[in-house]
Length: 181
Image 1 (spheres, helix red, strand yellow):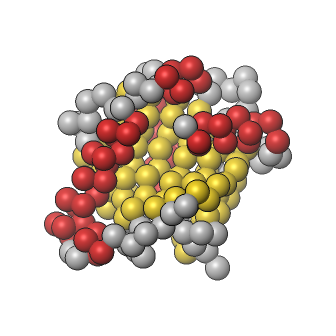
Image 2: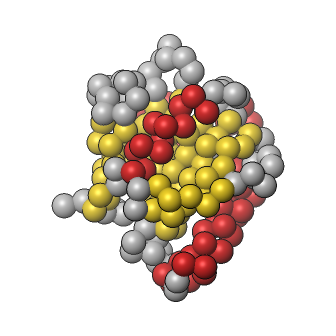
Image 3: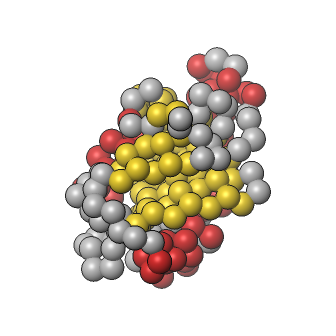
């Protein structure tokens, strides 16, 4: 997976920033603040219609964590058609992503308000070898739609059983999302 390779590149080549660090996506035109008293390293990538920011905890941090903020830069007009249609569209987006990520059970997902966003939130195990090999098979996933109609996935990947302790880091980051100047 491309973002996993980015996590390694970020660990090797990016300067570490003491928390909080700004995650700025110039393609999707938003910023967010990532905290947690972790010296995150950050990289960004644009692949076709997908813009991704990846933050990785430094080598030796326990547990190792990767946070990904992925935005599809194609407006989904269904997501802008009202609350119930946006909820169903976001649910289908999460289900589709989970097919690609090979998620385990996502039936415990909840639709929550996080700051100015309504989002599907779920913690699951990922069955992809890349995640297992990195030691980050557990994922907290937050699927939402931006005010511009872009489908977004914010995810925290970490060791099995460790995401609950780090959940507030990702939730707090999503709450800080602001339009980029």
